[in-house]
Length: 180
Image 1 (cartoon, rainbow, N blue to C red):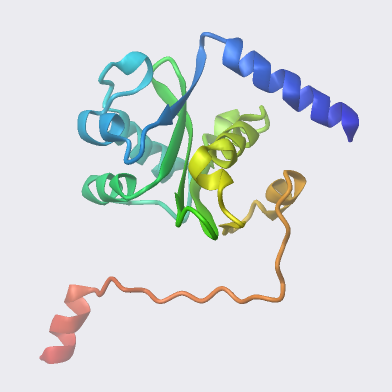
Image 2: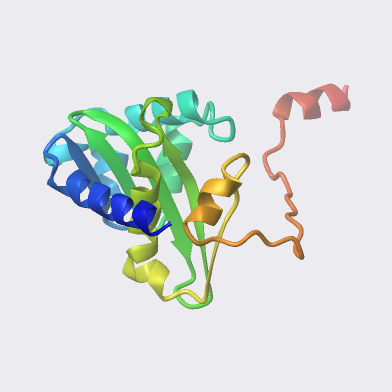
């Protein structure tokens, strides 16, 4: 356990020192990424489109998001981080917070070809270390298939609560069919 912790700490230092891998801590709303597609080195690289491709290829829960909707979700996110190698996005995560009681981590994803290298921990720790998130009493996240990963980095499974969802987007075609 101690060896694993030290290995991750050293790996994180190597990531920061490695010129090939860059962690970007975007300002609130990520206007550079959202509006201009800016990636590493503050240069346009179609970053928003690359984020969409990362989500499409590496998630089930964020597939087929529209660029317009991605812009909106970034605009309304408090903390956003992305991980790049040259002009290729390797990972992403974002968080929302009320600034006092609750924060939620969202859309944490690492490219399948780069998992197991400590990048997920790097993104989560970057989100948790942000001033906005650190102020929260509790930090929530939901995961479909990475529960063990999040438990290893300090999250606890809560079995005493239920996750409830209300889907708000209505399928227009269904309404038209039902009206006929």
